[in-house]
Length: 259
Image (cartoon, rainbow, N blue to C red; front, top):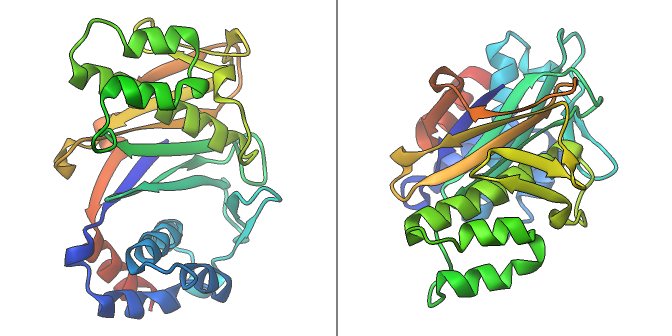
């Protein structure tokens, strides 16, 4: 798996660039993007739509041959003919980062079992960390809550929480089942490096952890993919598989290559 990250700052992203890039995506995507009331949300959505298109273009696919569809639960997948091996991808965003995990489509077609999540290391304003954990208490197992409220620094506690949260999100996105999955069914022990689902090891799953310290306030994330087998793999995403782009440069490149 690889993860591409686009670093987005609304103050540095001109409206003219948004308008120039919007025609690069199909009409269905344009309609969804333009429904956002806030321009920065529309820009994040546009960048998220451009990510797999730029990847396919990089692989030599003509712009007018690039097509996508979505599952009944809304997970996008590539329907571009002639892609061999098939492409598996998933896109997410949080504030200043839009991320895409991708790899070979092996199991779980047509969208394949791949997911990604990224989040900024922060707690809501005027909220203590303990209060924050209490708010999301229903989504954590007893073990997870003990780990984030352990006798560690608040910085470490916040980091532990978001490692847990992004792994859960990446896993459920890989399943492609939409909202409503009980997060307490998944347990990530960040100390023992163990993932269980319904009390059993998450066999056949690969989880890759990554950080984006170059984004100012740190962002952390997980990519998840079902690869089959009996084992569970939890490791750091290798440096060569983690790429970061500035949003303005990335979109300008997309315009140049896809127009």
